[in-house]
Length: 352
Image (tube, rainbow, N blue to C red; front, side, top):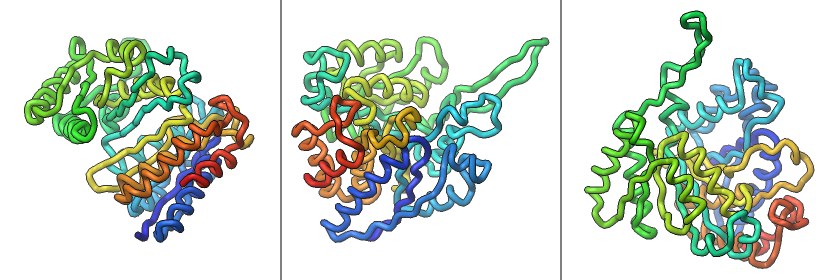
């Protein structure tokens, strides 16, 4: 296979972890006789510094014409001015919208060797294997109107939680499709006791459930779901929810695995083009020290191979290598070890 992959290393530790993921992909390409062409572009705070924009039209066009996009992380204190005209996060939202990636897949699987690094008791972590499917291009982050004004002499801020029926249906249908290859169980998370958008969400999820009778469907309020993730996470299989709820719940779920540095994600649309990134942030406090955990980004590259390039064997080889590496006791600082970012990637490459 020949594939064009755009790299968006971003800010903070982003360039460090993306560099190691590229090394893994290069190794896989050599071993399985593929050709991967990597094109690096700026996005996020680094792009603001150079171009005055967190995402330029040229970078978006390059991403749209690629076979897949691998992202590191964006943001940091340098660009946190609330009054700024542009922020790194705006570029990330614009990228998701521009690529049409409406579903974010975040797998949360607890490795037995890392249970001690979770704040939960080991008995609560046995058998935890969750896939969160988050709607990614609707809801509060994209609804309109949005902004600030003065009303009745008072400053007012407005965000609009807006969903169309088709936006809900397509992501819920994807969740059911994925559930059929797992435990055939979907938990749809909403706030239907309060929000009109959630009542529409629940109505459509119920219809999709009726069309897929071989999959069990549960409805759960988001506050209950946040509690259930901690008290009984092994009960859950596929969770599907709207944008902001998914954002919050997946960060909460990351503590189950012991470190955010362990977890990958894939953002997918209808075209096959995907955006792949670890769920962690830019971690500016450790940037440049060479101690960031590259595992989440390396696992994101495995998801890239699986979902955008349809290379299942190669994707599984990387995931197996990560599992064996953790089992062997290889660790970066966030999970109790002393390996550098490069050394951790070396351990994974040696087992791929």
